[in-house]
Image 1 (cartoon, helix red, strand yellow):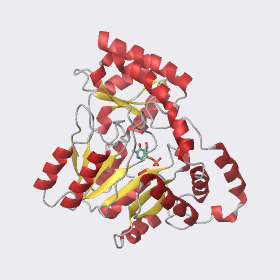
Image 2 (cartoon, rainbow, N blue to C red):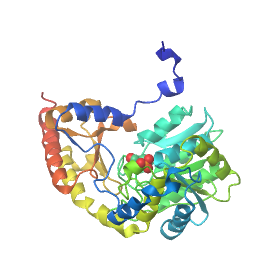
Image 3 (cartoon, rainbow, N blue to C red):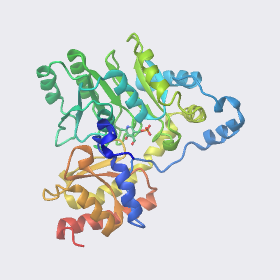
Length: 394
Ligand SMILES: Cc1ncc(COP(=O)(O)O)c(C=O)c1O
């Protein structure tokens, strides 16, 4: 029969998905509440769901569609990119979510063994996508300890010193798991550094609408820049699996190469889901912004819960749906703290070690309604207070 030794090293040596471990923890902890998964509590717009209902019988939704997406959805997205993101020279490929978009890009831009750059704390799935495609030469740069912004000075030095230059530099804006955003001048500096070095810059904008306190998300464009977007969080469409890539139209052949990957993974994103995405998009960004506003209270509830760690230990909350908290120094093994919180205090969060930053916690404030967040935050606060005061008593 099969033996472990017969499996591909590429995948065996890829990290175990932290969410799978966390889901097991949640199941094992009975009535535990989850502040772990990066999800939102809302469903897609009601009007969009109503419209899509009628399409079930439409024969075309059961057939394959164009590999790069429904023409009418792509057209609407090109317009959205122009209007909202100021991206004027980008072409669109619709994917089965932003994670698949990232895999398409890794397979299209990188060869096994290429050097790539990420910043800790990083998005764990992006790290795994590199690993499982043989791109194991992953240089993980630091973030500014005060702001958690990826460190551009470090990148400048690395790009000067490293020959050949890294193939891809990737950032998430606003960040998962940092919960901070990359201010426009810093993002532009990243773009300039990558262009001068001959590296691709891949920016994951999954949380583009999740900005707070009047801050504004921006994108950069260039022949070396690829932007990723997602319908999952903005429109509450996690399970419908729709995202897209905005890639530079001027780069000859890039679209054709991306299509090779696309044709061998999903062929096309679910046609039914793409119709829902189009109807949702028609609701306009205001619909999303209204949902996002409702998270401000959740954020303050979780901030309060983390406050016993001390103000300087808690970062994020500027964007996305995350707060990122540093634990007291002795808790380097953050998974132990996560297990203890689940077992004793019935609340589940993500260990920072899964994102390359041990000794910390990622807490999501998007997945529960306000009343539920209040209860989860109460449990978290009790746990954190106890942790700081007495340690992990049984
Ligand atoms: C930064 C980031 N990119 C991509 C994804 C995955 O999005 P999708 O559901 O569109 O694949 C997530 C989900 O948590 C995310 O946080």
